[in-house]
Image (cartoon, rainbow, N blue to C red; front, top):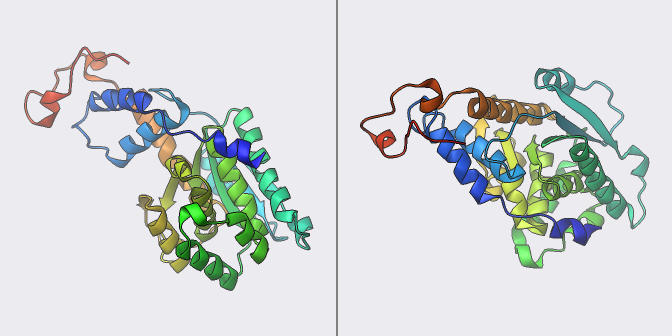
Length: 285
């Protein structure tokens, strides 16, 4: 199952991205003026393989590694109409040598079920916290090894990093099913780095919504070389940042679909400046 999922992770559809960019360039606004929103719209076009992707229901999957019941993410998920589901691994806390494989498979399956239900965006989060010593050890190994020589599963097994295994499985399953993944805090970005060591193409499917000063979060985002869009001084975790990432993507899709082109609005295109070279009232989707 693991090898099959990796083989299904494909590069983004550049043809759809190019067509999406043409529409963005011809919307009734200065060329490139919405910057990150335009980049996110094009990313979604490449992920789903459609030049004009529509907004669909989203899902946030929380890996539940503790007994905590209060979920702050529910408040934020409601604002983006996202369903929150749990991948409960508490029962696996006394693992055998195959626990990591089982949880990895469960993560892949959870993402697949969300996509089968219509989700094109999957947010991820962790309920509880990773052991900081364990986190630093895993990060150090990831930094010391090259992508081609890294036996990631062995690292997870050696460290009994079950929460990370669940998150990695969700990320791989989402990318294989052509869904964007919105990250949260340190745990999710560390899982994303592991997933990218397994399959570098995964990076194209990741959206890092916010930046925090938490050292592990900052370092993993740097290693992933992902743009971050918000700085809120936030360290809440538990999927809150993932919900904010969904809100950014939803806004980008609303721009793409609800703003009119110059032709649709029947107004003049730019006659000078950079817009004069690419904007056309006759552009079609």
